[in-house]
Length: 105
Image (cartoon, rainbow, N blue to C red; front, side):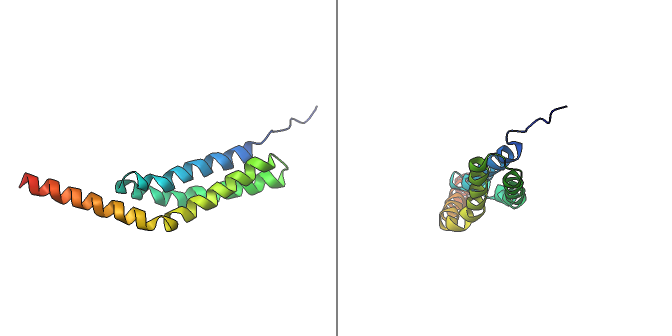
């Protein structure tokens, strides 16, 4: 019986986790309320990096696994790089909330 060769399930998992982690890392630029989702990166990024390493060890698609691991690393670093923009968005959201509260009262 012949062995079936998997064409890169681990590398695909790495790239998918990297893309999802990047989305969660960049969502606070849209609204400050999405900042609560950035903690999910601390769970997805290590899993994505491990999947990329397993893909490299199993000689699967090297390009996809490296791209996935780079995306994972960028997703974990991005909130630190964009912290100033996140804080500006949060301050704007609080200002809008206070304006709405003053309009009600």
